[in-house]
Amino acid sequence: MALGTIIRSFAAPTAAPTGLAFDGRTLWHCEYTTNLIYQIDPATGTVIRSFAAPSTGPGSLTWDRRTLWLSDVVADRIYQIDPATGTVIRSFAITWANAYGLTWDGRTLWSSDWSLNRIYQIDPATGTVIRLFNAPGTGPRGLTFDGRTLWHGDSTSGLIYQIDPATGTVIRSFAAPTVQVRDLTWDGRTLWSVDFTNQLIYQIAVS
Image (tube, rainbow, N blue to C red; front, side, top):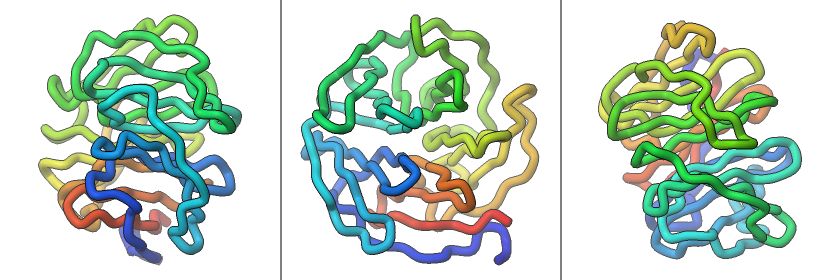
């Protein structure tokens, strides 16, 4: 399939969808009107279960092969969460606002900053910023890691960028299904995106 081809889509279970993550089998999704985190069957879009987010501004989700991580844009914190119980394992404060993107690279976290148009690499044990670079575009939102590169969704340009995490250089880009892409996740083969405007979750080809 061509780069950016929509494979399928289904309705998000919420009116203000923000975060999206993939755990190897199911999708995880959050939003800020119900303040719930949802586990979703990616084949049907059916909600499997849900639990309360730890604060009132859930922005983005990522999976570290064992637990969920959530960035919160009201509390300005990142939380590590046990997905079986919804219990917070730990959390740390961040110094930037509007952390709408969050991803795990196997060792460290990455977060995007919608206010300052930056992407940060973060030590998950301490919350310390390891390094940062400027995000492409002026509305950084979604962020995911495919095992080698970062993918970044920009809600101003409506583009999804593939980025070299070592340099911050854009490798390529394509148009998102709609402008208001809020988060991205990688399933090992394709991207998934969640759209704030039409409340849809998309599976997107990138090869």
